[in-house]
Image (cartoon, rainbow, N blue to C red; front, side, top):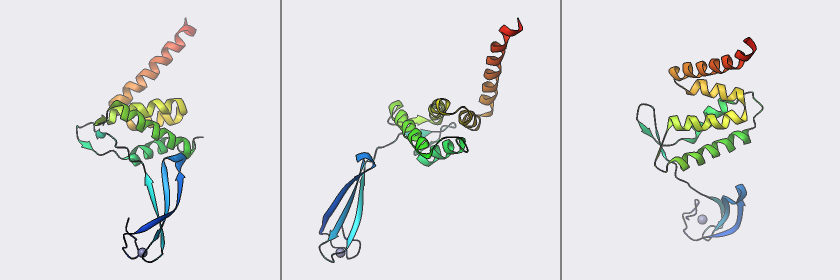
Length: 157
Ligand SMILES: [Zn+2]
């Protein structure tokens, strides 16, 4: 790697350190030409499947979109940033298990909802109501009401 100060291509690694539980390496380098030091990072790049949207259009996977959606749903709930991060990582893992090529936004929504459901009921309902289309929400509300009817019916008899 070239020195960012003098463009010299001969540099030496003077220190290496593992980061993120061994999934990343930080290297301190020293330039043979000007003796200045600089830092490089080596990380693992895993390719993610493309996203197929509801209208059939495709787009590249964007972690911040999922992260933003989950974070919003978890606002003011007892859920740590670390828990949100871990959840997004699990969602990504589940996506790669579905397909290496493409995954629909619908599938992603289902996966996220599954995780949120176990994590926090309020965050789950928030996410579900934002994520699902209006028709689906009606269906969703109907399902809940239906469950409640079933739940109350023994008492009414
Ligand atoms: Zn240099």
